[in-house]
Image (tube, rainbow, N blue to C red; front, side, top):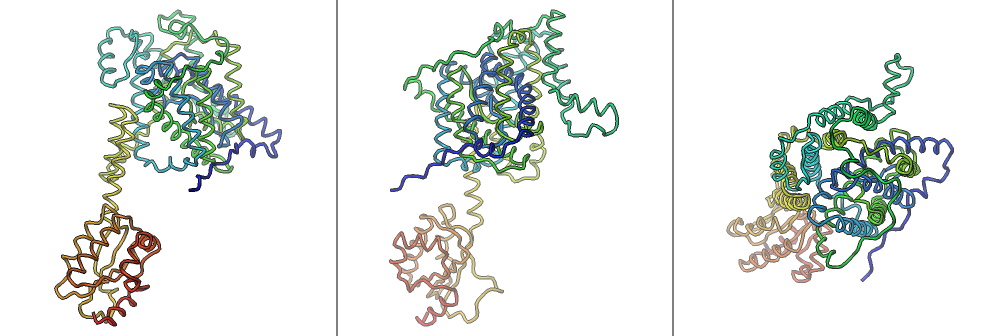
Amino acid sequence: MALPQLHPFRPRLLDAVRGYSGTQLRADIAAGLTVGVVALPLAMAFAIASGVKPEQGIVTAIVAGFASMLPLGGSQVQIGGPAGAFIVIVYGIVQRYGLTNLLIATALSGVLLFAMGLLRLGALVRYIPVTIIIGFTNGIAVLIGLSQLKDLFGLKIAKLPADFFTQIGVLLEHASTFNPYALAIGLACLALVVVWPKSYTMPLDNIGWRHRAYRLAAHVPGTIVVLVLATLATAVLHLPVETIGSKFGGIPQSLPDLQLPPFSWESAKQLVFPTLTLAMLGAIESLLCARVADNLIDAPRHDPNQELMAQGVANMVAPAFGGIPATGTIARTVTNVRSGATSPVAGMVHSATLLVVVLAAAPLAANVPLAALAGILLFVSWNMGEWREFARLRHFSVPYRTIMLGTFFLTVVFDLTVAVEVGLMLACVFFIYRMSTLFRVEPPAAADAPAGVPAGVEIRELFGALFFGAVGKLEALPAQLPEGTRTLVLDLHRLISMDTSGLEALEQLRRVLAKRGITLRLAAVNEQPRSLMERAGFAAHVGEAAFSGTLAEALSASRAAGS
């Protein structure tokens, strides 16, 4: 038995540096600086919302960004790092298994991602229905928004539970601890991020100074603006709100030491489902992000298998520095492209920018109010959800609505793993039902009926795929034949595929007909059904005389046999 062919290890960087020019380098440096500034508040916010320290989010962005872009990446401009989609997953793992086991699960998911890419399984992610992706994405967005209400309102809650209904109960229970200063900061930050200019594509000579100011302002990320303003307001006015310094003691002005998390098989056995969840979500998010990037640039399309291997390495390396799960991030990738990035060099500059910020300006983060980060994350969660899809549901079928809404509610109420498992099961059931309804066994239409059909000969055409979900229609055929039938000709030129259950039903039909003295003939058998019949011994059992190349030949053989 031949071993499966492994995917060649060829990072996109090797192709990107061919003919690399100084103009491209300057563009990549500018783009990397911009996206690095954008990534800073998001990395801190994602980490805090995930139940870990802010520096772990920054370290993840640095380490994962270097690991996935520098030597390995399969995409030209994708930016890797901590992602909003991981927030509720990571928070749940930390609450249930602890931080150490989160690091182990992250490293194991990296091994799994690398193996998926090596075994050429990157294309399998495309088989996940879009209804499931929309459903769990919107569900995660709701959970992110809910998790930020604690810091937005400044509620005094020591630790927010991971369960949806329990979260709501705890939030209502502590509503009396509401802090108006925190709410004011959070809402002001949210409003400013919403209205801050986000497009600087208009020319400088467009109309006047307002448009020039708009374009210049758009070069400064709104998240950084609100972070700086909120931090200054908190420090200068001495506002009584919770900050990074009051909760976490600030951010260390250095990278953590390399330290592998303690590993044991007992821990690994407990982390099977968290590992699968992190790997599955990481693969989906990374490849979706790479597809978005492909549509934004004029460059060769990404290599999904190489991208999975790159994300696998990133997630294996990040936990050694205390990092959390990482994947491709759409918002930062789009920012990278719109800032002029041309190659993976921009991703490396983004990581270097974050590293310089940590080494030079980490103490300044102590006064960052958590309410400001909550406002930023509320904006992220709103942009993350595809809310218009709910309004469009009325235009789609019941199976589509069921899968999307089912995945959405299961993500919110239970967790992502359950939601995707049930969503895939529902998708399979509905697909089987749909395919079974498309399979038909019918007499030829009057316009297509051949002339001169001998007496006692019945013709039936098979349409579609004869598989386990459709065999009932073939099993009912003998009872539908009129009295005096001596030969049944099955025209199979529109039967595109058959599985072993379908073949078993065909064999059962032959036996039932033989007991009634009726001969079975097969006409115009396509390649796949004929191959299965030969491999299973059906063709040899019924004899070559039962097969005809065309319907006319089958009728001629029936006429010659006296049927």
